Length: 114
Image 1 (cartoon, rainbow, N blue to C red):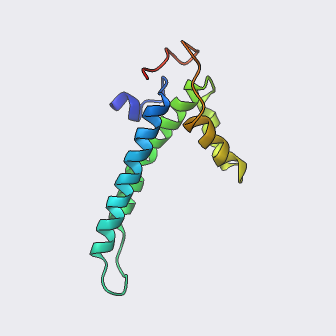
Image 2 (tube, rainbow, N blue to C red):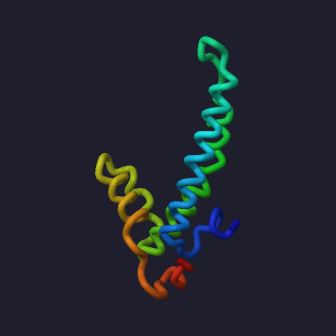
């Protein structure tokens, strides 16, 4: 698990990518619920839960993105395509979430388990 979440080496499948994304969504929803419950009647309060979840997923998100690009036989630097306005995030979403990886071994390692 640590290899998947913290290392920039290797490849991951679309399933692993989507499971990580689902985990992030669930964590953010739980944090938002806790933050909402802790706010006063005027909606005042500091959203510590959301802040903590955001900080906790920064590096794992980078690692997951890089490995998904590796599975597509592209360098991890492709993750920066999300900074191209409008087109970049859509491109990254389609490439990483929907297009299959390179069949068999590629320059980034063996094919990930399905």
